[in-house]
Length: 334
Image 1 (cartoon, rainbow, N blue to C red):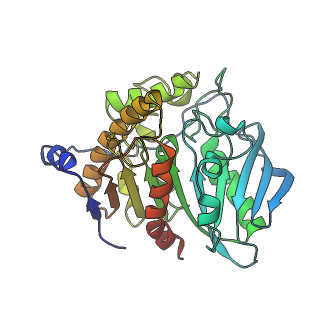
Image 2 (image 1 turned 135 degrees about the vertical axis):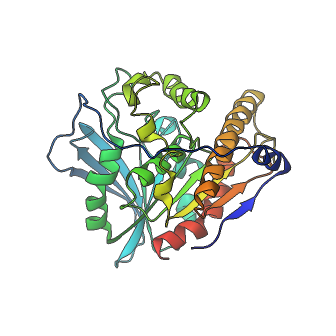
């Protein structure tokens, strides 16, 4: 594995220099007694739509989720074994396109970018406000969310069986999906070889960052107590990438963030969008500093990119996934 590469702006250097080391105990990761324990039945593909020669939509009935979940897969036209990248959305997670496709395919050039690569790219459609995690109980607005079970247990055998998966996997995401991706790899390190987290909050150990995560759920109309319980519930520690960071040892890790300053992609945006994007990316910047510091304390190599500008918007994530690709490709054996 390559050593850590840091591209860091002056403001970040000042903050990092003033940081102090904090000891974190690795929590015991257990699921609490919940009201929505997954059924033992296997997931079943109910419908397949061949959108193009290299893009397929699967409609999978998930016993854990208690519904049919659409998953789109970008894949080579040829046969033969290949690895798989699971690519997660942000907070809207499909609602922008009324659940017809992932925002990654709607908002970026990811389809063209991976068209010459021998990899399956799996794009769950939906998951608004869910953090791609297993919730403790159903939510009146956001429904049943058992995404971790779906993505780590139910879906991989289907993907590998239908799309020649060779068993080597990585996971990536942006914003809410960045937190989700880091949770998936740290809670299931045996399943993934690498991770890319773009503009995410990778630290729920502090009240401020925990409130940020809870606020995201509230923004989509959900009750965050239904996810990991109230703030003092130990399930929060069991879903804190910062506390679970030791499990990244030996993995290929990429993390990136802007800092909220206006950059080349921002000047065509309206003022309201700019203000929200600036504030959200400043929060991601702060969380990334803390997570980066923790990786340094543990001496875990990672590629951490601090852009000198950038708001919480899709054009930057389109750039970032390409910057992350060498790290992801290495983890996938490409």
